[in-house]
Image (cartoon, rainbow over all chains, first blue to last red; front, side, top):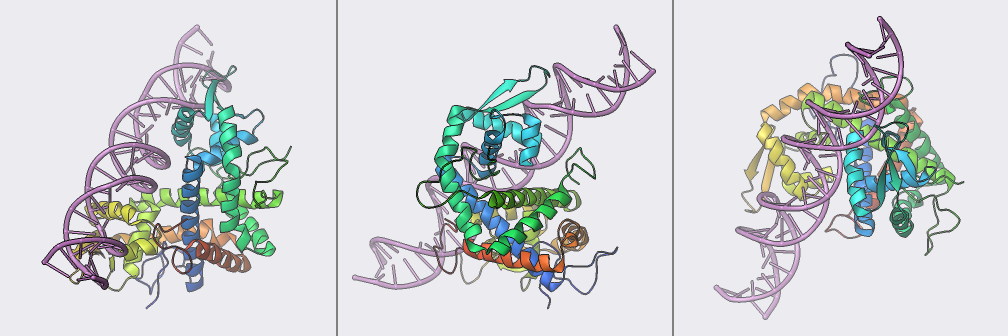
Length: 179
Length: 179
DNA sequence: CTTCATTTGTTTAAATTTCAAGGAGAGGTC
DNA sequence: GACCTCTCCTTGAAATTTAAACAAATGAAG
């Protein structure tokens, strides 16, 4: 009996999906399964590491980093949302939480009264300085330390391609951000 | 000014983390950034596709597939949790939800009174049959169709390595599943 | 100036996930 | 049997995410 992929097709083999697209081959299934497992385990791992050391999940940490990279630690909500690849709604909630922690502050936009800036506070900078080392270590141990230079290069190219294909900007639509 | 990685170190460069671990190089930062973006976008994409077509998130779909792969569409809760790389707690909630949908049924384990089996119902099988094609198509379009055979192979190897490194079984601990 | 469509960001409720316990049975050991 | 520990799974509350609707402001037409 054929083994079905963890997140693709069910075991009922012996036929293809209606229009065109064939099932995943055994090899493709193995790749896909590894991908799902690796990303699931990795996100869990990083989430816990950061929750423990920094008191926030990985996505939130990414938001602080995103702000730290920006000109004056400031970014319009929409820009930050795009940078982090999350919806504006999710960002609103996240920033509200980070604001309560004192890591981030909101500021009105002078030119556009609808606009809001998310600003990294000094405390925010501090948390990053304090927790970045641990996070980098975790990332290294889980990923880079285990891969050869060639694999790292390959990984970068592959992820770049996949990300581009799902990016809502250039080619396709641009509103619901996906689809 | 150096640009910091999306989820690693803040912009404050010019020094290394205290003990040993160096910051990510520019190239490593690019790779890591691509990785985060790709996986974030991909999971969002698949979640929406499945939510729309199958009325459930990607993880839940994975649970049904996991059961479909098992001998009689049956699996002990713990086994299913391990297979899907999620906590038993999360699985409990998930199965409760899937049970309400009629896709899954619970059964007591005769030999071990603590045990529970999660069983894929006929309706469960049906949902998979109906929605698998669309899911496979989504996965293909987002990933496999965009990669060369060499890249697919490489991706498999890399993900395999990363997953193994985070796997709680063999070497390290085995209880909190991570760490 | 009025209207209509769009953009920005928030808000509410529902769904999902996480976290910390907890209940009950299994498996020793004495 | 009493006792202790571990395992299996569940539970309830808190935190986070999603989905849908909304107010306010912008901007382009007309």
